[in-house]
Amino acid sequence: MSDIKRKKILLLGSLRYLLPVIKAAHEEGYYVITCDYLPDNIAHKYSDEYHNVSITDKEAVLELAQELNIDGIMSFAVDPGVVTAAYVAEKMSLPSCGPYKSVQILQNKALFRKFLSDNGFVVPKAKSYSNVDKAIEDLDYFSFPIIVKPVDSAGSKGVTRVDNIEDLRPAVEIAFRNTISKTEKQVIIEEFIEKKGYSSDTDSFSVDGELKFVSFSSQRFDENAAGAYVPAAFSWPSTMNMQQQTELTSEIQRLLRLLRMRTSVYNIETRIGVDDKPYIMELSPRGGGNRLCEMLKYATGQDLIKNAVKAAVGDKLDEIAQPEYKGCWAEVILHTEKKGIFKELYIDKTVRDRFVVEEDLWIKKGDEVKDFSGANDAIGTLVLNFESQEQLNEMMNNQSKWLKVVVE
Image (tube, rainbow, N blue to C red):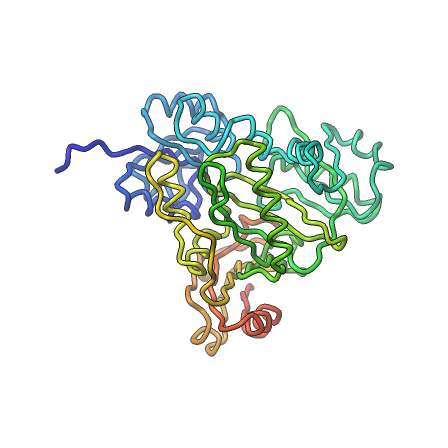
């Protein structure tokens, strides 16, 4: 048995999206520790060690990390832990995605919008508020439609589009209820940016602050779902033209340099407005939920998860290059539009045999299901591979003909 010390990596959170991260870490020979305050979360069953510590309590996590003498820390696909991971990394001089202050900016929608505006990026008109009444009183600052969000949540939790004054107060109250912070609750109101074509939500990777892998997707929504702004499907390559992608890539790179970011995977949301301007809507130094890195491995052959794990402990990365897509790929986020008891997942046999590469259902017959109000209401995923963009669009635009989540 080898006496070589195994590097210890601390993963914050324990959602199922961490399972491939744990697998990659074990393949590299690392000792995996998970922590959060929910001992029944699925990924704890696959880690080497678990600690019941809230990932939003950065001092408690720091104390744990020092006690365990970890070599690296990550908050992959778990938004509430990103700031904590950066804080611990900086305090312990561990490999990190970037300066703690920069990560704070990226993880707070109000600070992020201000940073973009101060540095000449294209940005929606936005303002943050610390109480409901102030937000209502300041309505003259905006024109409808507007978007109301918590400044610190992810997964489209608490996000509402508002088209008239009657709906503003309920939307602001919903946003406040979905803030992560228990002490400094804030929401942001911003002008709604009408998109041209599909918006993009996908993952990218920088090495020493240089974008080595930047991807764009076509992000799709279910207009019949309870959460109209919860992503319901993704596809690659993006339908954005190369000029648009080049302009967005340049602005993302400029942002990373200004913030002095280092080596990291990023979840990045972008769009082209009907004004033809490029908007960076969100940029978080973590892997995205919805298995986006896994999808990119299918689509490009590059393993961003393995490189993110290696980066977290300071090991040499595998080669990373700009993506070349091997065909057309799509991911459907399985969900139901109404609450009830799950009966079955119907997929047309011809579609399953011809296009479905992977079917990952997280529930069984008889389980209770929620309507699709947030990303955590998903019940599984489908991975599909198509021969052309036309074929992909035809199938994705007509999902109801071949895919049904049957609920009683």
